[in-house]
Image (tube, rainbow, N blue to C red; front, side, top):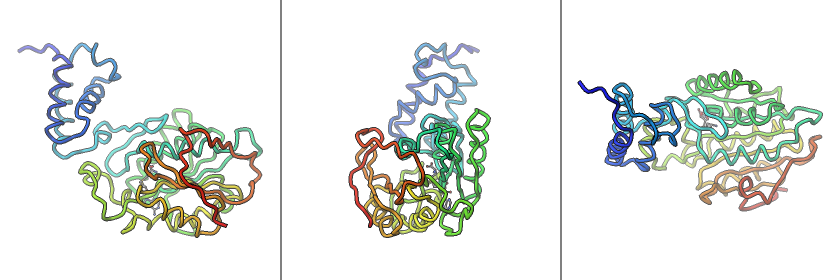
Amino acid sequence: MDTRPVPVAGVVRTAAAALARAGIDSARVEARLICAHVLGIDQSRLISADGIDDAALAEVERIVAARTGEKVPLQYLFGRAPSGRLELSVGPGVFIPRPETELLVEWVLARLPAPGGATRPVIVDLCAGSGTIALEIAHARPDAHVHAVELHDAALQWLRRNAEERAAAGDTPIEIHHGDATDPGLLPELRGRVTVVASNPPYIPMTDDLPADVLGHEPATALFGGADGLDVVVPLVDLAASLLAPGGLLAVEHDDTTGAEVAAIVERQGRFGTVEQHTDLAGRPRFVTATTPGDGGHDGHKVDDDNDEVDTTVQKGTAR
Ligand SMILES: C[S@@+](CC[C@H](N)C(=O)[O-])C[C@H]1O[C@@H](n2cnc3c(N)ncnc32)[C@H](O)[C@@H]1O
């Protein structure tokens, strides 16, 4: 029997054709990602790889079959997902971090008080899932005291695992809370003490159509926010208002159809001053930010309104 490795280019071609037949967008990109993952190399090295042996070929075929048949998300099949400057563990039960959330994280990081101030910034990530927001902030700002809140057990397990991995890699450990972000009494010990509340809550309106790999695999509790997508957002904004210190910041991601509603919810809450709507890189409304009045004893926020990569403000308003 001939057990010579099969040339990589042919395996990529065959995998891409199978993925394309199953209606998967970017079939060739995915085929290259799968082969690189199985070989444990960067995609850029595929062209110079020796070939794929029988065991690796079987693994490529297994992943392609799961992707084309059950439409399992690639990130679940790899067990890992990129998350800004990090890579996190993901699998069934947890929402896969999305690139849109990076904009919110960058916005927060650009506005945290400079390191070396009198007090450590306190960050609360509500609806933390894999921990993407909390862990990226802890990675970029070792001086920050980061708290992550998650309600659902399966997601909580991934959050704990990722937090342990990042702490083992040298990041400042984050504090995990098993709690409900719609509970107005949550985190009483942090009342009025928080520098930033950041959140990517479940926000998709119940009526939305979603691709099979999202709907069939990612938890509904991570996706949907009731009929209008705002069930979690409304009480979460109230909780944020009670947690934030004077001069604190709120950043909430939302569905691209509910930007104006979320801004209005924040304004109506009454505790916030400037409320801003931001778009994502595709120009769709994506997150709302707001500040509580006062300077909170901070050195001032590092605001750079000319930085388009970070600040994607489309509209500003003042609540009071
Ligand atoms: C859209 S996912 C976002 C996860 C993560 N922040 C991210 O950006 O990838 C929403 C998360 O909120 C969690 N969740 C849903 N309702 C919640 C609640 N009432 N309190 C806390 N977490 C909640 C879900 O389990 C899910 O992990």
